[in-house]
Amino acid sequence: MSADLLKLAARLEHIAPFHVMELAKHAAALERQGRHIIHMGIGEPDFTAPQPVIDAAARAMQDGRLQYTAATGLPELREAIAGHYRHVYGIEVAPSRIVVTAGASAALLLACAALVEKNTEVLMSDPSYPCNRHFVAAFDGQARMIACDAAQRFQLSAQQVDAHWSAKTRGVLLASPSNPTGTSVAPTELASIADVVRKRNGFVIVDEIYNDLRYDGTPFSAVSLGEDVIVINSFSKYFNMTGWRLGWLVVPDSLGPAIEKLAQNLFICASSIAQHAGLACFTPESRAIYEDRKAELRRRRDYIVPALESLGFHVPVMPDGAFYVYADCSALSDDADQLSRAMLEEAGVVMVPGLDFGVAAPRRYLRISYATSMENLEEAIRRLRGFFAR
Image 1 (cartoon, rainbow, N blue to C red):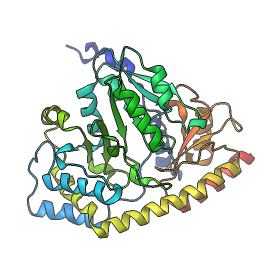
Image 2 (image 1 turned 60 degrees about the vertical axis):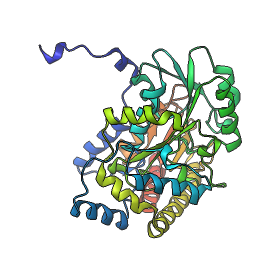
Image 3 (image 1 turned 45 degrees about the vertical axis):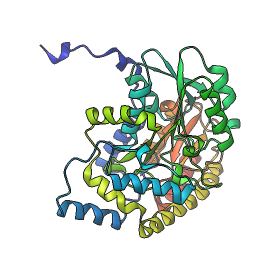
Image 4 (image 1 turned 90 degrees about the vertical axis):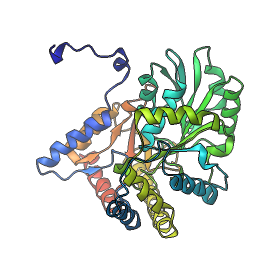
């Protein structure tokens, strides 16, 4: 049979291309031509894993600790993650409720595999991270996107969840802090959302991969809202281990056997080397490094927001976490996609249009990542000032 005649699964019709990556490919082509490009598009910290984590990985390899682990992860890593919740958030979590995964993507995949049924809906905010709705589509569910404006910090409210819940609704998937907006759901609002969903016997999944990168307010995790709230986290962002593919789930004890069964069949386990390295993330030495880096990201946020506004962008909501700004560019252009391409071609600066993140106002906003050096941020603003002057 010719490969051209292979029939693709119908679910692929609901999975759109990722414009962020397409823009990144175009930027890479310009770099191959000798252009210097400043990347403020892809959400990846410019920091890499600190030396204690690298050393832990090297020791694991030298000692031959390279075999499969349990599908739920190394027991000592699950205990260390539980200790993280105790140390940072004052929450007691049983290590048995923690499942170590091959990145947050695997955690979301496992959660959706366990909970999303064919032709059911999962409520999400618009804007939101596109891959999250595609995880739902992968299991023949449908993400129901609900427009959330700047007045509500681009986040779902309990009232909206209540109003949009239908006979087809299975649950809610939130991200706090969010990609692309860098905004969080207020703890009281998140608690209200959980209460609304409980009354309907649905599920709440909270993506907290940026939660340790909150710059404002008291530390908070949705884990504190009850055992029935499913929480996703990752070593990629705060812990600077993007390519290591390591994350975790916090699930109710009752869901543990189902998640373990799925993990055994779909992944076997997360990388053993990454897991042994991950243990070093929780030492006092590593914590001090991560907190210094977090302070640097906050310093970049406090620079880039007023700098963007000085160019004519409008930042309607100050981001309180992650490393993104969701900027309204309507005073500069009526098409964020065209503007992003022009800025790349003429100024050598990558910023991502809102096309990936929803349908409510995709051509009005740009997502801007400040996970690059202060030197690069300052140079980007200098270039853009000249670009807009022209």
